[in-house]
Amino acid sequence: MPVTRITTPGDVLAALGPRHSVHEWIAATYRAEPLYQSATQALLARLDDLDRQDPAAVADYEAAGAAAIADLEGLRAQVVAVAAPERTRFFVANETCLFRIGEADVHLLGAECPAAIAELDAGGPDQWWGSPILASRAHGDDAPWCPTCRDAAARALEEG
Image 1: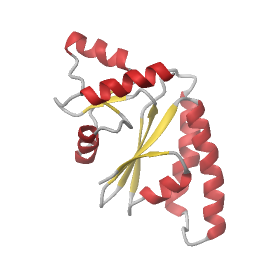
Image 2: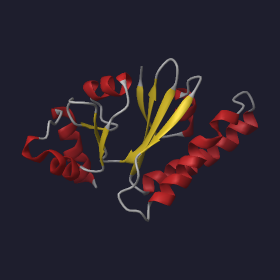
Image 3: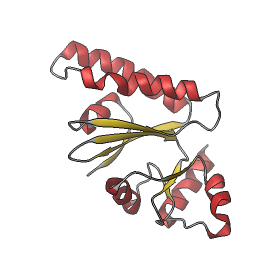
Image 4: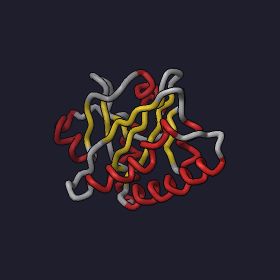
């Protein structure tokens, strides 16, 4: 069950299963929330009605989807697809979004981390944080960090 960071509309189409759903992390600032919403709608809302056998419809979707991905990237957001046989879930979140499932380690969404991928495959996160600082505040000095994701989060913060 692959986890894919979406960078093109073609990635969305390749990730689709028979059903899909969107799990959305709200932007850190309320001013950005409407921008996340509109870009997510442009990228994912029309998928149920898209005739993938119609080249013109696919071309229209790809043009709108490319603009939506550019808008999200401009907001430092990411789209991550978690494909399972019965459905594909799309997570829209800021680049430094962290998650935790139950008592497992804290992971960075979109990181190349086998443990994070396995946990997203197994189920949806029940705890989310918009940044490593917020995750650390929630857990104090005892934050149960996944070492791979901790390093990836540090690199993301340095690049930002």
